[in-house]
Image (cartoon, rainbow, N blue to C red; front, side):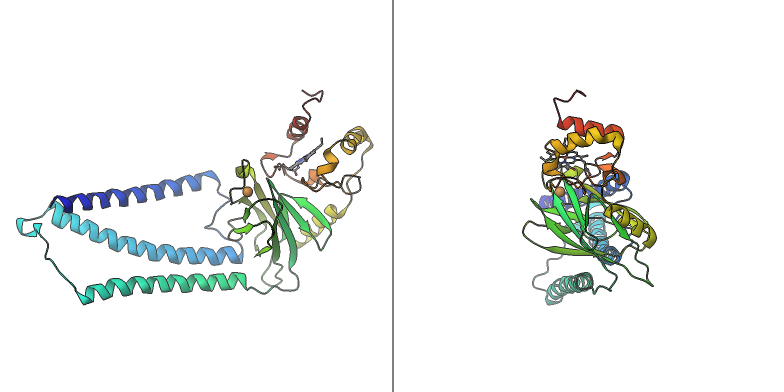
Length: 325
Ligand code: HEC
Ligand SMILES: [Cu+2]
C-alpha cells in the first residue's frame, strides 16, 4: 500500500518537473533572439525539418496525453476517491493481449518516426542542384567564419551574402564546410539544420532561401572560450543586389591618401602575418580577410557593431603600448 502511493507521487513530481523545465526552456528561447527561429523556415531544408518536427511533436504529444490521462485517472479513482474495495487492484498475470499491445504499438510508433525521418534525410542530403547553384566554402575558425567564393575569387568573413532563390528561377547555395582548427557547427535555424565543420573532413549543406532578408546564425558546437560569440549572418539579397555586392568585393581595397600613415603602420607590423588586404603586401590567412572590412556591419564574428569607436577599441587593444592607452 505504502509502495503504491510512493511510486505514483514520484511519477507525478517527475512528470510536472519535465513539463516545467520544457516550459521555461521555450519561454527563455523565444524571448532572447526572435530571428533564430526554427518555427518560421524560409528555405527547403529548414521547411522539411520543421514539418518533421511537427509530426514528432504531435506523436509525442499524443503519447503524453494518453499516459498523463491514465495517470490522472488512476490517481483520482484509486487515490483520492478510493473505496475500501478499490484499495487492492485486480492482479493479472500473463495476459497475451496486453503484452502484444504494448510491444506492437511502440514498435509501430518507432517505425513511423524512422520512416518519416529517413524521408527528410534523403530529400535534404540527396538533393540535385540546378545549373545556377552558387558554390561557397565556409571555414570555421576559433572564433570566426571564413567565407570563400571560389567562382568569383574573393574571400570574406562572418557575413555570408547569397542570392534569393525564386521558384521560377532557383539559385540555391551549396556550402562546403571545412575547419581550420576544432569542431564547429554551422547553424542558421531559419535556413537549414546544423552541419558540423570537422578538421580534415569535408562536409556539405545547402540552402535555398526564398525571402530577402538577414538571417542570424550561431556556431552550434562548443569550440572554445569564445564560442558563444561566434555568430554569423546570412544576407539574402535580390539577384541584382547580390551581383553588385560581388562586384564590390572583387575590387581591390580602396586607397585614400588621408589614411596613408595608418596603412604604413598596418603594412609594417604583424597585422600582415594574419590578415589579407587585396592589393597590398598583407597576405596572412590566420585572421579574417580585411579587404572590404567596411562593407561589413559587425566585427569579431558579430560580437559588436562595426563602428569607428569599436574598431578603434579592437585595434588599440592589440597594441598595449600604443599612445591611445
Ligand atoms: C596573430 C594573428 C593576428 C594579428 C597579428 C592581427 N590579427 Fe587581427 N584578427 C585576428 C583574428 C584571429 C581575428 C578574428 C577574431 C574573432 O573574430 O574572433 C582578427 C580580427 C581583426 C579585425 C576584425 C575583423 C572582422 O571582420 O571581424 C580587425 C579589424 C583586425 N583584426 C585588425 C588587425 C590589425 C589592425 C592588426 C595589426 C595591428 C591585427 N589585426 C593583427 C588575428 C590577428
Ligand atoms: Cu564554435
